[in-house]
Image (tube, rainbow, N blue to C red; front, top):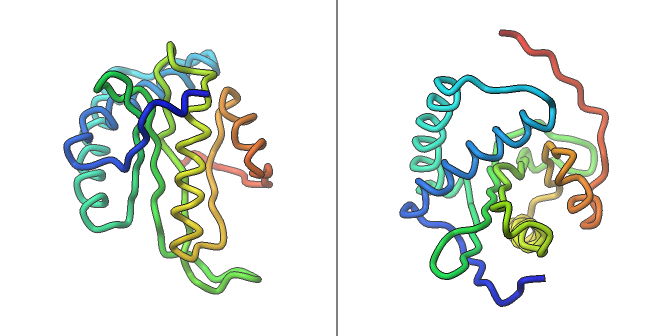
Length: 160
């Protein structure tokens, strides 16, 4: 564990690193699936995600956390809050979604992602959320399961 590395909530000044981490996360996931993203698609995602962060960090519908080592962000992750359908045992019409988790390769397996996920869980509980969902890569699945996340029956149809 690297509890000595400071964890803090991200600010707008961190947006370039958050965008870069999401891009690298996407690239890593593609490699694990023996796929490859086109650079232009990643560039479009970077631009859109940067705008998304600027809007939603500001309005509070997205919160992100970073961990630093020697003044450099080495791990990050975020939670977005959405309006959602009422469900049994949860009529709040709110959903929290964990996303954009990334740790620099040389800092992996030190518990940094776990610390960020725990910060997200704590923030969701404090906000009165009933559920936190995510899509896990194979590399991250064990971290999430160790914190109590359960697999679900979600399915997907790609329309484009």
